[in-house]
Length: 336
Image 1 (cartoon, rainbow, N blue to C red):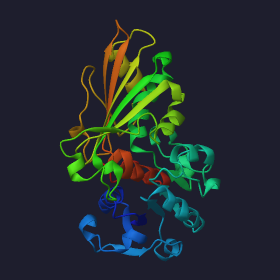
Image 2: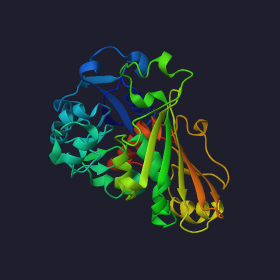
Image 3: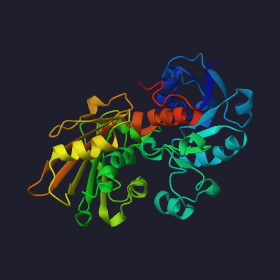
Image 4: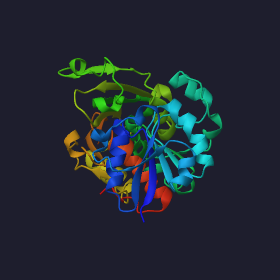
């Protein structure tokens, strides 16, 4: 028997990717939970319409035998649905930003909305397995990280832990994403004529993913400058991260002594030989985060390039990774 896993928001890009991954999962099967816009026929996104369907209600947990529910929904919908689904006994993995920050005040500051389920903020386990793996198996509510913070923190935190960053000089993160990161809801900004043959920056210094980077890395806001940019492609995130070294180090030392040691047993981190960096094709439709380093010991300059698929390790792939940990399956099940 494969464990039934509910998906709310299956018609969106992240939700459809989760359906695709769960269809090939050895221990799980997707159950489409219809909610508002999902109530129509979206078989063209789901690929095969002969999947189990139910309403996105607490009764579906017992009625369909759901072991977990993935919420690929806007934050306000996640806040509305999560409490009742948790009370019904399901593990909830939320792909929105609803439960990533720790206080309602912080949420209000960055999302410009009141939090309607503040009691769950302290309970939610942040689902970046490489740094939060111990909390995930026992959590009822797992908050899947944002795509930009995933790529940033996997690159930055080992360097901060090793004390090799001159924090007085700050860290600059130049982040570029494919258009699917904005979701499937139509908007002028993400329409074909606005994005094709174009390249634009947005939410400069004020992107709502910034506090996630700060929370996980331990940086202060004045130490981190983040700019998000929209690439005219469908998927993928590439972040070019600039900083000054606290002491002279070569790329080989950074890769070999810091990244390789920290990520020796991590199945979804791939490191490049010193002097080489990843591109988006290398991570497309995978759950990998690829990291490459260019360092100049004489001047103290260093650049790290971190690449992920925003729908993979940045959303649905990481959600499945968290699902595996929460339900006791092999962490890589359905992802390799």
